[in-house]
Image (cartoon, rainbow over all chains, first blue to last red; front, top):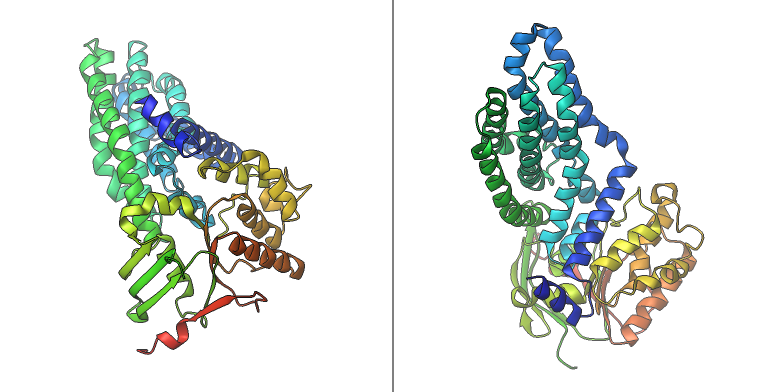
Length: 239
Length: 211
């Protein structure tokens, strides 16, 4: 596979597929670093949910520990959703998106790099912050491993699915509401198996089944979502 | 004339239930410069977006070097440089980083020539300044630097001279002439009076007889 990927474009004296992917990833990460406030927003939201929930409901440890697995997962899901709307918007507005669509390079690579950059900037920090939230919500220590692993496998899927919604709504003036409606039903399985994994870890049941399902969803997403995102972007720009 | 590079047959497009053009036929060959004329709202940009492959809201046939467009999309994209209303320049990146991205996308673009291209558009010394600190004209120039970088044979330019000063316009005219002389093809819209030899014109106002 890698041989085809490197030989084919080399014949046209062009950049290789790997080269394009790396250039796209580098550019997207650079762009994300230069607008830091967008980065921090979902993380603050994530933290706020965990801070406000005990104040609003009950600070009683036993009660919070019961809710913690689902609560952390719902917060991570909503934080991801919050960051989704802006994924392609800036590119759409300044014309870099139409240039990417017209480039002779495969769109799926550019799209995949964009989603990976998005995950590195939101999903990964959310995963790393999750133990802190678990601690604040009195999640038993046994659940921490399951929480981290399930988020590590689940948040990239959330980014991939969310990107489909973002691509479909990027041409609309106010896509924010629509993107939630489009994407939420697809998020539900990830949420169920993700929080299920944490519950299982807390109660000492085996995790493997949940993680395998999350991994399967991720594998499916990596293969199919970029195709859907690319097609959706072409429709959005054409309109 | 040799085989036309780009051929358009019976192109029909409408916007908001208003017919922009119907039965539009034309062709451009290698070494030609074609200016699309028409008043505001006559569909110049729409036509260029259709030609570039961005817009699908049309009926009719497009041929690239004699082949139907759908079958040769990959080759067409390699040969195409589209310069649209939107500059395609990231405000938070520097001119150098912006062009570096285009160099990575376009096969055959020499990444070492980025500095040379920036010098050509008069942005020497601004390589490392984020684009949002540049003036509107300089912002456009970053995008125009792509013309110097590119090895594409077909240029589709939508209002390339907006916000560019007189000297810059004269330079771009020369560049367009050189490109045509080297066997390239240029399709452009502009409200500037062009001083080019061998310029062909296509007026969309005369075609929209149905409105």
